[in-house]
Length: 88
Image 1 (cartoon, helix red, strand yellow):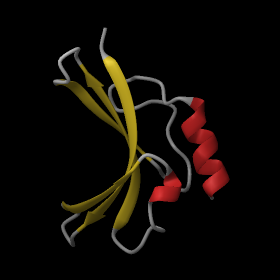
Image 2 (cartoon, one colour; image 1 turned 30 degrees about the vertical axis):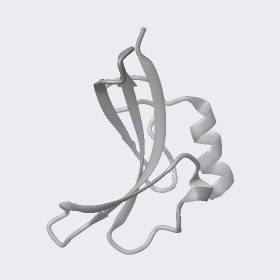
Image 3 (cartoon, one colour; image 1 turned 90 degrees about the vertical axis):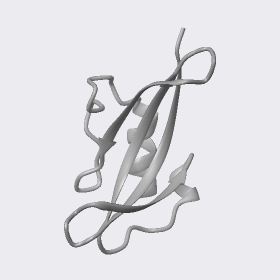
Image 4 (cartoon, helix red, strand yellow; image 1 turned 90 degrees about the horizontal axis):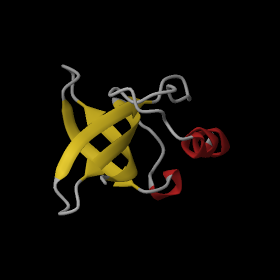
């Protein structure tokens, strides 16, 4: 059975909207406030029993809210919606 893990990521982009840097954290408290040319993303990784990555998917926060699903269609757990609401 695949193991699922989640991680917050602040992506920093350049003038072409290409990602040039990442800041990862397991909670939003681990990260700094968003700055210019940055966006908040929740990353979902699925790994097999040997730790090999099976699938990585993203849920990009927009206007302070997460979508209901990751880009792969997996539902974003409610605890991450609550964490983002509490963090403000």
